[in-house]
Length: 112
Image (tube, rainbow, N blue to C red; front, side, top):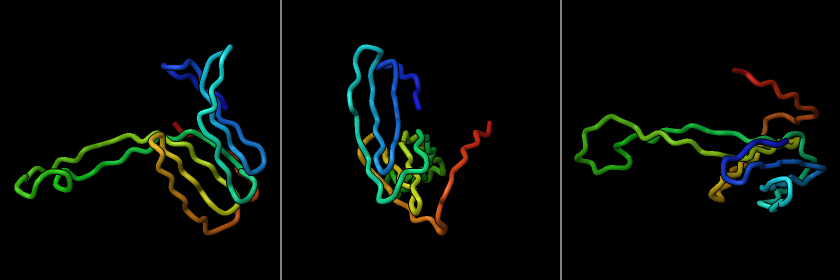
């Protein structure tokens, strides 16, 4: 899977077996950004943006009476294997969620 990037022109995310590879670069130069490994074969790998909001009162002092929230976009790489969904953020955080069912095949449908 390839996507355009403003800074380095192109990013590539591909997987084979239990390993996924994330590279950045252009037509002449590629730089390995990260590799990821799962316990079972990867069924699908994709870039994903999560949108979160943190209530303002959790960030500011208790005297603040604002009911606003701070919204944030988190760019991630998601890997789906037979038993888990793994999420890796650009700043190095990673999350794993066990699936309640085994995945044999994955069909990706983009909804707009």
